[in-house]
Image (cartoon, rainbow, N blue to C red; front, side, top):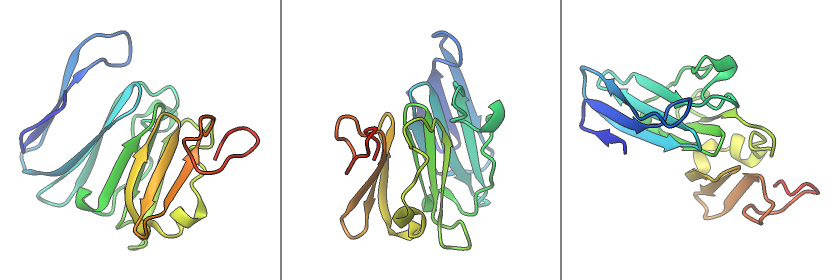
Amino acid sequence: DPTIDGTSVTLAGGFNTGYERIVNTITKTEQLHSPLIACGKNHTVVLYSVESNETYIRLLGNNNYSQLGSSGTNEFPFEFSSNTDNMYLTCGNYFTNIVDFGGNFGQGQIYFNGDTRYKQNEIPSNITQNIQNINQLSAGGYHTAALLLDGTVVCWGKNTNGQCLGTDENGNA
């Protein structure tokens, strides 16, 4: 289980191959602020800020679908514009979503990395054009749901069991 003590985040669990138990500790000399942790099927993403308001990301685990970054680099191809107080982080089985409310010159930005087989990356325009309207974000195995400030829920991704609103001919929202 993840543990957070103010200056470090410790993760214990399987890593890349097999079920070897390892411990990864993220330690900063400055006080950690608002750490965010999300787990997919075989990956963990930790986002945290330090006193200097610099935001860091730590990506651990399997990267078969680039859920930890492109080309197996385990790095997201962007820099964050704000601290984690202004962000959401969710993971599905093989994908990661990060919402940065301070991104795109204060208009907000949503980032996606990973599996695209079930349209998990096809974020609806009413979300991408109005990031500031997101109240909460959550991911399931192959889909994501956003609760908006007006109380509506918008879903995208795999919908074979009706977990999203609306379907196409392939069961994707």
